[in-house]
Length: 297
View 1 (spheres, rainbow, N blue to C red):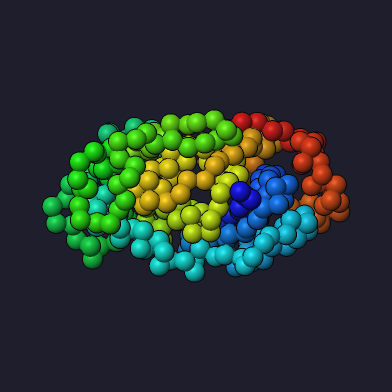
View 2 (view 1 turned 90 degrees about the horizontal axis):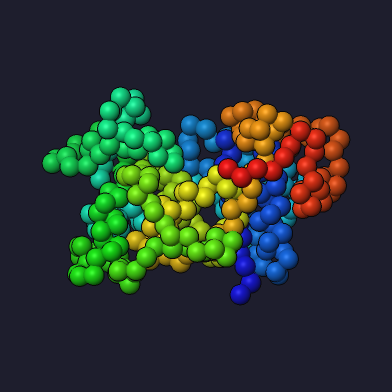
């Protein structure tokens, strides 16, 4: 089977060398196997996404010589797909509205740490008559979702959610290793935010399936998220791609390159006269500019 990979940046800032490394890995995985390399713009964060950053992403990839196949896909144009997936989970009774703020969760004494920070303590999980006219998010009831997955009896509701996975173990293949999924480490994750129609977890799961992505090549920092994505794939009866989580780039201080840390951008390198072909070849060989190194997350 010819692989389908994707590079899926968020236009919330300019790309840096870590993005370039990830894009090269995904691009080359497909090209070396006569596969397809897709570009998806994950632009459903209304507070941070900017059109000029989309232009910057395209300019950076073309400068690097990484051409994508097919049409450029924007998540902001796919909101009905996310709404449909959320409605299926609602019909199965697996999600609930949440009215809590981040401050409410931070103030809770019952909020332990998880991979994404504080685990939601379930304050809104059993509200008898939630007022849906108030701003709210939608959370996955993790206990119900796992029970639904594992039950061997009748489906939990009259929904059309598939039941062919019940009684089996959630697993995925990561660099040819079988990983047992434990999504409960995240608690009741948000699937739709108050200010956005879908969370990263829901949107990326729906889109990878809809685009026929067979191999997800991305940074090790997203390894833990795959636990949640694998559960959503099972609940929504979606295919599970193979995963390849690569090492991350760090700076001279050992910190992971990130937009919020103001890592030097590809636009900076371009303005500095860096040869893009030489840069890409170096990335392919694991040879990084001075001050950068590869480290697992």
